[in-house]
Image (cartoon, rainbow over all chains, first blue to last red; front, side):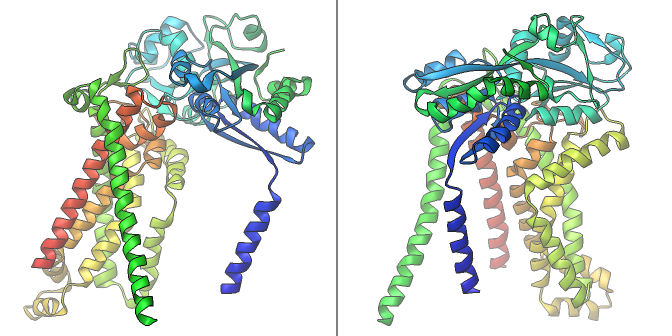
Length: 268
Length: 289
């Protein structure tokens, strides 16, 4: 038994030595996550000596961790806010912002729902709790289950800015922690409405037209779809070298192809 | 030499216990240090009794009544589910099962305690919640009821194993006296054994309460996260631990929101502290009997 333990211990040490590769640490928005994961897989294939670790957490976590230099790249689906810059003044001066892709916040409902289209006012009324039944929107007699992202989410911040403006999100709303949780929940909840990054829309969900326009490559690029946003990567001057190389890869032709493969819209 | 060894051992264990106390007080102190500044922004009364929780809105609302009630609903629901299951299995294992059956059953129930809470959460999110919608025809499957069921299952091993301990310490002569008076097995269990181990069972329930009220992952995944006072058990809630876990990452250190989350931690700490005090009270009363 004792020899086994010693053996395991040595084994662990050896393993940890052999993985002593150069590391890029990335965290933040779950909207940006699929792009980064796919890009990182390719990047690591090309550069076997580099190890990229990726976590979600939400845009706020991405930005704050990048400012505090806990990680090398912070993903965000919104711009850094002025309060984040204010409070972390000393650290945030060398924060570098790179736009890597475009995304459309897509409004999704259960496929059985007959509603096809909403406008921003209706969306605001739904999320502030003024409209409570699909009947009022010409749909089936279902109670509306409002699904929102939780407060650290960049989607939540952007959605609130464009749709809710000064209103508060209804206290009945389900607050879920990730794009995937929202998509899964809506796929089995007949009365639900929610929003996800366009990369998360699949055939178990029904995409809605907003102000008469579907989110698509064209409508987003021409800035016709109202819920369009940019996706960002934040780095600091100190973590530049390798992190910058990875970002350059995402901005390259192949990187932007990956962006499209994941269902987002290229920035270049 | 032996004396030296003994002294060394004594001081090592002494330092170990000292550290535990140090950590405890360190954690308590930091919670209060970070939580109390909130009351420069919000009155205690408004914090506890206001139901609106919109921490990122401008201006923000920091009322946690709906979070406290969410926690209590889910926890009480869990206990209502766990008590009959836990106590029932404890009675079966301690009083009725054959020694062989006991040997098989006991570790299986204790295995429940070994499943990581995130696995319970995943189960609730992907299996229980869709089933709820189909079976009950309710709008959403992430609600008080689902969370209570999952939490209840998690609390069963605590109630079961502690109650079983309590039941098995009931002296044999009590049982024999009961049989001698003509009582059958059922009457003996219900009227003699269970009442005699009442305080042990109560303390197991209180420990289960403490476990359920502080559980975070399951609540985060299954309770729905809506900061409202539910009007029935099929509505989503946002219990306190889920709020802290979901929002701590995004807060700017030193902001009112940051302090408010520590304020919630204080309330949560006081509730679990109280439940431990009550447990101790029951255990001590049992000893002095």
